[in-house]
Length: 197
Ligand code: GRF
Image (spheres, rainbow, N blue to C red):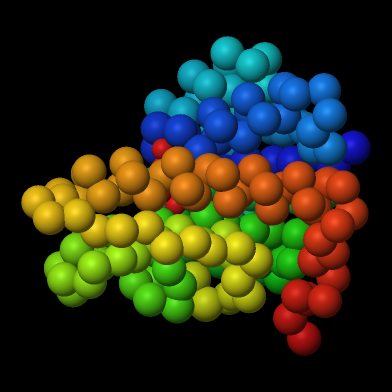
């Protein structure tokens, strides 16, 4: 049974979807802990499912590296097989990435390599593209530059706002994330080949 740690910053709707999927008896993975860099609303989902949580408040650390080291320590307490970033709105320091990659995956609300970074939805809208997408990648030391594990296009509709477009992307993101975690848990998808030198 694959054990998974999920890191969030926000509403945790993708986390919720993963918790619901993992509740299915035949799902080959379970979430063992949920962590965040701030008091995330998504903690409510972890509590609803009886999953332990930890908080490593970014603003309490002098440097990103110091924050990252505490985050890494907290994750290691649970020794998960896989770490999932699902709405974590922080770039992980290189030390954390190197400690966990390639067993460290991220969901992104765009069709990478288009529109990486913290505002993928807003950037796609501003670019006037007719379609964007959702991607699940292995985290590397770049910004959303890691190997793509799954991705799917999502249409941009007339009159879309950042919110309406993001809400259309998220269900696709959740489906891709759950499928990738299922494939890793079942042994169908091996992340070892994605290890960066
Ligand atoms: C997701 O689209 C995630 O990819 C992006 O922020 C959003 C978080 O949504 N980084 P939620 O917190 O899972 O609702």
